[in-house]
Image (cartoon, rainbow, N blue to C red):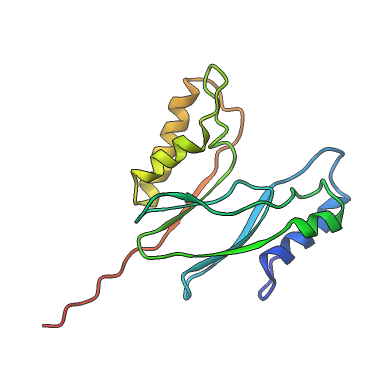
Length: 170
């Protein structure tokens, strides 16, 4: 209900923090990445409240995008507000944006080691298609856990832009 047309991602997160501030128990917090996908301009505009940084991949080496920000519900409004920075990234043809929860990089193996960002980068480097990348990441987390129960949720969202081929005049 706080996301309204014309309201920036940072402003929306600021409103959410103010709304949640008095409702959350001591020491509780929420991380959140809020963004707007602009289809006509092929760009993604976002702000992060302590959430995992998005990845962009396909058509080049995978890279993590900037994130940052303080989590919702933990900090005084002035400190939270000052921590937010909006970012914008173009979504070029052949590139895919990956949003995810920390259950991806923090998935633990039986020895207590996390899957980590390097493993995610390796998986994304070998994929161009968002659906294939999501399935490969899900499989990697399952293998990495070695049959152990998940200790965290896992949410993956891939949004890609396909290249449109120009008709060749005859």
